[in-house]
Length: 366
Ligand SMILES: Cc1cc2nc3c(=O)[nH]c(=O)nc-3n(C[C@H](O)[C@H](O)[C@H](O)COP(=O)(O)O)c2cc1C
Image (cartoon, rainbow, N blue to C red):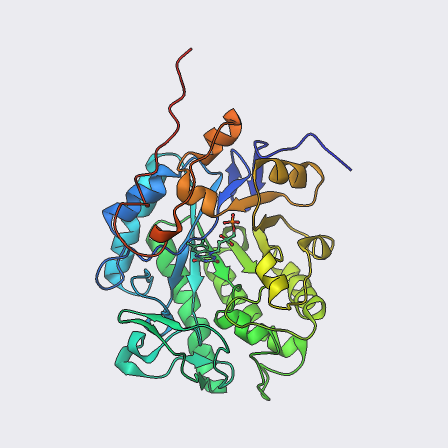
């Protein structure tokens, strides 16, 4: 059933009325300063993109033990809160809204990134099969992580809650819980990485428990109308597998209904997931299960996104690479004009090159 809704139809998302349904996807850019503190340069980057209906920040570790890559920002120190305030003030000055993505990488880390050089933590002591850790000294083989003890999990939940509190202190309009892409919460959800025998492993209900308890704590802090959750049911990134993603994520998505979240953010299966032999579950499978707003992502362009919204397949669409290269993506979509090409060599780390120097469209005065 087609409607006349499109990317430019305003929408009420939780506590906020968005002028459009174009969302900037969370994008790690590895440009925080020493101490993983956001800077004025980061503020310029986000403010340039403030015409999006909603900005979602790059993934941001809630504890130093949750860091998995160089120069990713945190939200656990006073300096980081002050640094993020530069970003939120700049976005608000341009009339935008920004949520912070709360992150713990779990096993996707390396002792050289951990305080005291300790092992990264995970649901179970299972190393990622493929790939290498990204460290300050370059790529290094993954180590086998340490399985978290059951009595450590309240501390993990508290780190997310404190991260959410710090995000509000820093002026964020809300938070997105990163439950996607093979990081800690996803590692608990899927049976390829979770082989626990306590109350947080085994059945689907037990594997989803940490995600749900983190969500409960974060919702308790921010209010459900300022919280979103991101999940990637089909993703094989970071060596993730699940024997029955329809059952695992069907349960998790249905269980999230109880909170009345601002939105659920789902990634579509990708070509890489297919190549890696993943079990592919399109976001359409979850549409009837989730009772709130659905934001979809992966390889959308203007026409595909407009069609998804008109057909009711999604309420909002987030864009990643297109937002890296086009600070004024909504204006370009509206004018239906050409787009800048993203340069992958400057995605992760560096300075303003490939970050704040993509040109905005100069509309010709008529
Ligand atoms: C440079 C880069 C950094 C990314 N960082 C994050 C991140 O911090 N958190 C996250 O959930 N996804 C991250 N992603 C995934 C994107 O949010 C998005 O899912 C992906 O780019 C597909 O959307 P697109 O086809 O519109 O680019 C990243 C992707 C790229 C290319």
